[in-house]
Length: 296
Image (cartoon, rainbow, N blue to C red):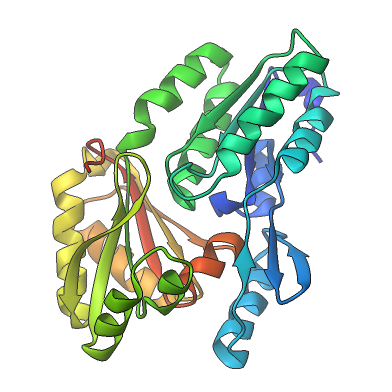
């Protein structure tokens, strides 16, 4: 349980950041638990590994297909209103606007709260990213707060570095991303039939793009390393963040290769949770790191 009396200001986010609930509790981070759907049934993301594994088993063994929707304005309003009871300024770091309408709905909720409860200090930040791409920002924000940085220093820092968080993804199949409209169905069919492994990234605004393609695992990993090498800055001083959709062996294999070849100081692993996983499906490996600003 977070002791709000010890906090100079509140760091909040949503469960698409793919940090575990235990880590959020440890770092004094307040997440909004997003929702996902299976047919007519609605579930709430728990951010707990045991539940995430069950989620992927339903996809892999039962062929279940989940759906998500953006946090609506009322949900965002209720979440922020509850946090305002602690009489602390708030920084909320949101799932990227290029991926979800959640950010714009939080802006609308803040405007409503400003009208009803004037004088509050709420910063809503568009991470322009997904998964650990903004999990990194959330962790760094909590660290800066606990080191005594002011809220304005922190907001300026996050805005200055967020587009330098580079994500690269690869997956065994584009079927799930195609179903959600993240890539074209034609690209998905060709990739699956020809055993092509796509390497995806986010552009400057946070839209998902196919960066390049690999043929087989070894060739795909080689091209991923090349892409990271082109963008990374001072890997020896930073952690490589790795998230995966129930593909820990592949995640470890690639991360250890990247650490050896590029010299990252540490590796941090996390499961891709139910919100992002509803779109990626099982078998995806994603890496995130500080580097040059993302390009179009």
